[in-house]
Length: 201
Ligand code: GRF
Image 1 (cartoon, rainbow, N blue to C red):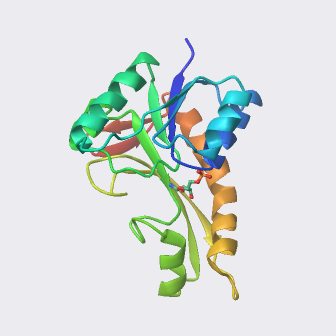
Image 2 (cartoon, rainbow, N blue to C red):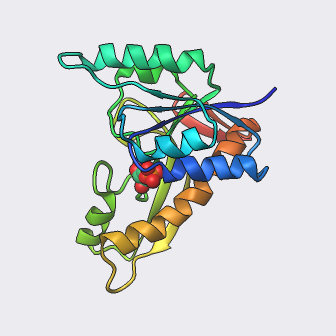
């Protein structure tokens, strides 16, 4: 049985594309059954359409609460029957009800070595702190912001003269490799969430 992925994006979607390339190359045994975006203009949607991957746009309507929006998002995602919901640059905080609905089946990638530099502009935070290395983290999503149980991390050096763009690019190359590798391990049942702990089998 194929392992089914639903991927949520808000923008450029380079992680989503890297995951798709891993599927095409046979490095990831999974099927992307839906790309869903909260932004109609997300650049990644065009790629998904060109590649024949089903897409959906779920925009927040005015006056709609986070809980109401997330209920609509769940309805849309569940139609794609995902085994794993993959956040790939999805720029909305998800409600506790959403996180509970996909408990153990919801992962995110963040451009820092968590727990350092959660939230927005993680690369700029790393530069401002003057750290010598940074990287990216794949983690299960819990109710906090970038606080969920860590699955894997990849490190990169912070080089003299780095700015936000150069550091982001170096981290992004690792993101593209690490995310597909982690998803493949989850698909194979080699990594699981047990309560608040990640177990590697
Ligand atoms: C990545 O840096 C990811 O770590 C963060 O948002 C960015 C998304 O980039 N969560 P892309 O849309 O996948 O290119």
